Length: 164
Length: 418
Image 1 (cartoon, each protein chain N blue to C red):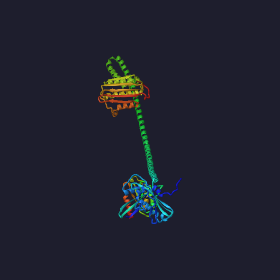
Image 2 (cartoon, rainbow over the protein chains, first blue to last red):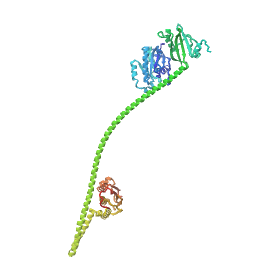
Image 3 (tube, chains in turn purple, blue):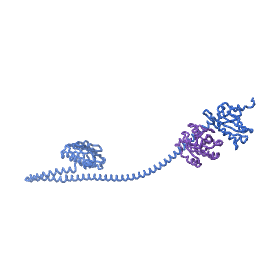
Image 4 (cartoon, rainbow over the protein chains, first blue to last red):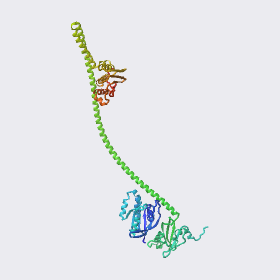
């Protein structure tokens, strides 16, 4: 079975680890536990084009003191950018990470997930500019919620299908 | 004294949770020393020699691939240098995570890999980072709350400004409406004042008319008494003298003298009816008493006049009260079908209260009813003009009681007396 490395990228506390846990284990916890370095998980997925073993690299989120190490990204076949829909600046941060990743990895498939969609009613309305830029970059933007599971499976499967 | 003996690296590696491998020419990794017992039990794959990760420690596999990278890998270039992997976490098989860090380096042309299981220092670092990020999230949330608050305040200020504009516009409209209303009120007040002035003028004219009428009545009454009455009396005396001188004409002269006496009596009656000389000579109290007595005799109604300690009353006031009582008695005779009338005067230092009460059929107390009766209305108007009060109390078949209260202060001409 074909296996591919997929990185989870984004600012800290946007829900990368929770998305992986929801996708791999079907579980969710409200407790926030920061990730240091990398945590690797894997899951076999069935796509319209076949099956794929996704090696999911849950990379620690960026903040003002810590940026993602390029060596973590090496060998990634695709990546999922994650932003918190309730924190518009995390969309901007995801787009900055995307620029670096595209430069390092070339035009690999990627998706932008606006996570925590279960809190969508509380999202501010000033994320339009960043989302317009994502659209200009040809990036597919999907809402997701690791808490409810909405959009999680669809995002990973859609990305996996592009790798087959 | 420090013993300088060779170090047992194996013991050091074991105690520090380190595992070391050396890469051979074929790229296989061979253990350099023992794997600590806890680490071996937790991750048996690390104890393999040569190292066979078998799908586990994927990050370590990636790191080894990086070190072997022909482009810039530290092992591929065989330079005396090293790289570190950074931290990663592995499932420890017990539901927890074990943090690791790896180092690849070249020393004396030999390629080494060291795996380090991170301990307390890492946990401290993680705790600090956890606290810092939770704090950062709280700070972000606070900033968002502040922004929301600022936006809310801006909206509030905007609404207040809009409200202020609307209030000012409305205030201007109200001021304009108020000014217009004030002008209309002033117009109404001027009209009302003109009306009051006109009414006052009418009242004054009516008062003068009453006084003029009374003066004329008095002048005529005096004329009747002094001229006609004296002439008739003189004629009567002369006729008496003529009867003594002409006994044959006694019968005819007697008839003439009878006619003269009737004329004299009628002249006296007319004199009283036109203007009571008692009013002008003895005052209001005596005049009212005489008026009540005359009225009882003429109308054949039982009358009583009650009065104690009468006061001096200005002539104008006296005339008006006298005329008012005469009008009220006239009404009793005309409409009340009464058997008894009582007129009472209660004298105060500055006013008098006159009550005319009968036991007749009564009349309506409705003010409109008073206005319908011109006589009563006329009396009320006169009393009002003097600053007094007019009170009508009546019920069907239970008589009528009219109370007039008249102050003396309103009078300006102080002639006459009670």
